[in-house]
Length: 511
Image 1 (cartoon, rainbow, N blue to C red):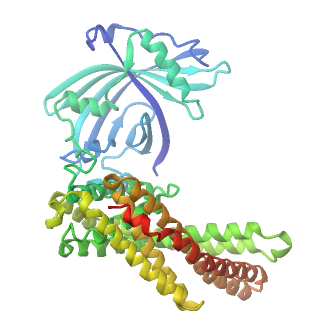
Image 2: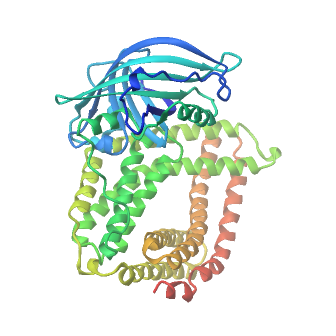
């Protein structure tokens, strides 16, 4: 079983006249007693640590700021995977010591490792002197470690001393600023390298290859679209472990990245050859659908809970909350299993590999070499016109099932039109931003309408289950009626919202 902890720390190194390490090992860490809330420093002894860090031959984990190690010695011997959260903050996920990488950690690096094997990259031998920083009540504020490190890689070695302060759970991060101020006066500064592994790789001549610089490159339409697709690919890869850990909103964010990628391939079909992108689009559609089962259930549950909370207690008859929990548990178990199965599949690995191949050798068409300002506006306008056709068709239909279906199709077109405008913002600026904002209002209204349609189907199912169990179905009927009234109101508001989003000046400003 893997254990997770949030690691908030800051690493320091000794300096002397601008030169590192000349006497670092002979210098003492200053006494931190009296710094901020630190009332005492308790010596906890010295421990020897032996850690082997693993990565792919091309160092994909290190390039993304991840570290994977097998360490012996100390109280937390075992396997550790560290995932970056923000500067100085990482989630450390540990698993018991074993000869091979535990499956729980292997799954979390799968989107990066894929079918490439992991190999030992660096061995770090550390002598760690540990102290506890305590407050006036003898409660732990942080752990202070002074590490004398020897890095070994392919016959090359490097040595240094670094000081690390890691906060205990619940400690105010401002403590690190106070410690840094004290350390600076004593000749220590914050380390340039974000981790021991990064420093070891750099000092043994094995730093990971530089990532492509973000941005539209040479300003052509092709460079702009590829930069956008690269950003979405990176998001898909980075969110994979978050979805596996069931972190809040992770499925939604991954699904949005899937949609943005798929939409961009369609929107910019004059830039990238559809013969190459259409098969990729189909695979993205598959992944979005697999993720959607879990996300849709999450959204649906929250909607019904919210509506239920709005009812007066006099209208809640029978074991309504319990019925809702049982219904959700049955559906959520299957939906989450399906999402994880998709991420574990060879098909998902092939999809990520196909995205990489597309970006490495893009099937650019002739318009790709033109300035982005001359190509992108036409694509954005084309998607807006597609949306206009679907909205117009839906408004011509009488209320009922057929209109609901048409409004759902309009919603999908609104998402694509919005994504098209948002993708063009780096090249087109404020006009594209205003266009995206206007279309987003339409998307939100249509999204609320579609959620109401789905909720009504779920409420019918809940009412039937309640009736079969001999419970009152009254409350589910009340919620159904409220959703039906909401949908009618949204449909009546659509013409005005659409008028604002379809103002000719918005598209004219795109150029």
